[in-house]
Amino acid sequence: MKSGDQKFSEGDYPALFLQADRASTGAQKKYLNLTRGTLILLVMGAALAGVSPLLRSYKPAVATASAVLLAASVLLTMFLKTQKPEQLWYGGRAVAESAKSMAWRYMMGAAPYLLDAHAAAVDQKFVSELESIFKERKQLAFGFCGEFHKQPQITAVMRAVRSAPLDERKTAYLTQRIVNQREWYAKQANSNSVAENKYFFLIITSQFLAFVAAIALVRWPDSVIKLTGLFTCLASALIAWIQLKQHRELAQSYSVAEVELGFIQEQAQHITTSAEFSDFVGDAENAISREHTLWVARRAT
Image: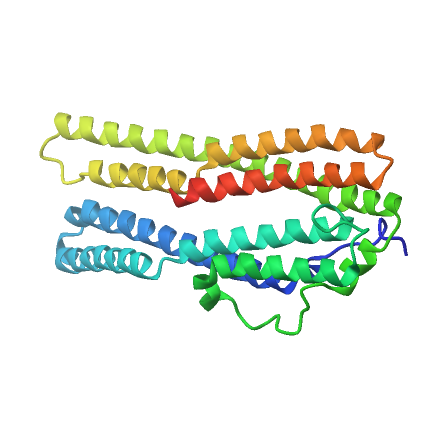
């Protein structure tokens, strides 16, 4: 089977990538779920406080439930502060994407893993640089499970792709790296744009309802229904969530990365030598790495 036709799966990447990717994905889910839970508890606490006057016979129980929900949100916030899963999320993603980029440079015979160098020296250099990436963030090692302890850092598929002729390596890189990455960027840009519009609508609706509830209290000051606090809390929670997810910023950066990769992809048809292909791969990987670096920088600030 030609390397260009062979499907390159995640299991064919270095062990470091698999460990960092799994750890980052798990930490991301943990962080987002805990944050979502905190905001939901806050809104639910505000909701119970707002409707408690309607449940006069159960008012003590409702008030207690509201206090418990708000206390639970405080505990979740403290847990997030102490555990800091976002650090493993960001750091693990940085390690994983660096390892993936290095793997593609190695397979394509691009600098600094050129094909005319001695095979043993190239392998040693590749593994040594993977080790350097890990050591820079070795404080994250607690999150790296031992699930992939049998996985090599240079897999058989990586070696097979590297040994293929130039045309096959170029086809493999275009179809399984450039095209896949562009499709991923396009999909992420679209989903983040849709999410941005959805949450903007929800925020505006919540703010409008808070305004209506406030006007209602002016008109009927003796009303037992007081929902201004609930809708204000809901709007604030949605704003906090959209700031966390950064949908607008991500939609823009993914769109820019996709377009930039498209420009780079057009250069492939003129490549005829290994030296030209090495430069091409370097430009593409630099573009991809730049987007991930900006992503980590935005998240860390």
